[in-house]
Length: 206
Length: 298
Image: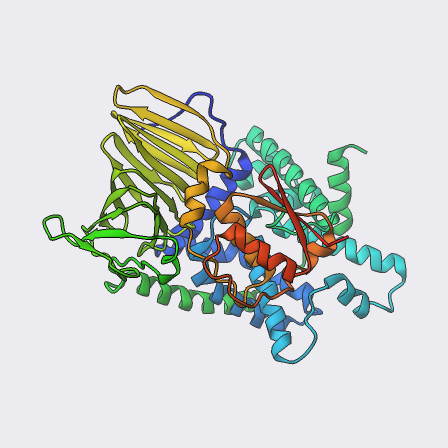
């Protein structure tokens, strides 16, 4: 069957293509595709773990428990995943709720205002060091919320200083495609960085 | 410093993201795998046969709909309330009000007033008169057959309406394919396509909110808000209305997932429910060009 786009109708953006890819991945997994389940776990769980760890004062055991509970509970809810927001952002929202519920159960104050929490735990740090720590976490958060291949490509190029040719080989695409992907990844990173900087709510803001 | 240099600077300064302990990831993945296997097993269970919940929550909106249990069977009319289930192959017809159902696969199906469909299966609907609206919420693929072609969803919200000798498809979210006259057309979000029986095709833009979707909103099941966070309530309202949500004050945005809503908004439509929920949350709102703008009162 040939799909013929209607003349004059807008082509889908790369961003919406990514959302569709994520949605398709989720649907394949829910339909019983084991490779899709593996891919989802490998691509998204590390970022989710870092998200939890950063909000649990680096407690790895607690982070593992929270992430494990989050992903198991999220499985049923994934039926409702619509692909409108990044999948990891969606999972992070579930994780945030899980953390909050965990603290409520323990009759402790919910740790929802993350900056205040960090300020309290880092109160002994000099201002400059604290700001730098915040900035690093901020950048890592934005990377984690990007599509995994965007984040990997950016880290390869700017952290590991891998050449575009090598990135293309790792991604199994041509050099031009790698350049194009890097351009989109930079744009996505800037957008994400700006959104987080402005304090906007992911998933609620357009 | 140009934009690439800014990105380079930020990433170089931040360095690599922390490694995740492989043993922790392995444990998480093992638990997830076990949960996933159970989920898939249940999903494939024959118990997941066709069922449609004509939920009581739509009773106040749907004043009446008729059910033919089988193509040759007698006409059965819901005298009061809603029939709980509709069998495969049944025909459903609405009177002067729309009605809402939930398909077995999880999709929300709505029938406009004066419409008639045959529910071939949980994933196949034959539209015989009027209009249907489907919101898959990412749960699966439903095909709507019409005399002029078949519309297949690709994970989306869309309307299919018979217009005399034409079929019109309006897509609110995602995309659908319309297979008619031997050609498949892809219809993307924000657009509509009309396929005439002459084979000609016309199309145009359509907003995700406003009058084109009024009947869908009217047919929507009332919001069940008890225990939801304000953020979740807003997401549901946005999905039904087609609005986007914007906070004028980041502090208000930050509190949206902290506010837990209690109570019942009865049979108010989602947009009407906001009139009740938001004042209780201490927020003012207005809607401008499909954007729901929220702020703290002055």
